[in-house]
Image (cartoon, rainbow, N blue to C red):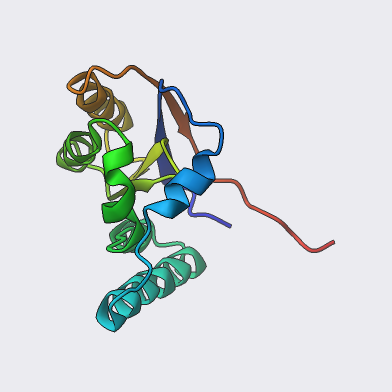
Length: 146
């Protein structure tokens, strides 16, 4: 179960989405990855798993660091760099592209100012002349075995 204080701010940019969005998003990924980058991403995934197991929001937020997919896809999202920078400066614990994009998600704790983080993300998209829809939510418990 996710930590009770974990909150997400999802920004969904209003963009024309190509018919085969996931195919386009996959096409920009590197065909080869340095072993050190792969190890770092796997390490972050392990830290995130531990964070959920320990109910540690700060650990989860600190693990949201992708050095392979995010750099390859960020150019597909207008204003991405500014949106991420704004969110982190406003107090987000972590930030990443949601799935194949173009939605982005900031991780925060209830003690952070989620409204400030969401407003900062919206401002980042506005700087790229892009409107967005903001959704604040908590991660769900996920699938369970009955």
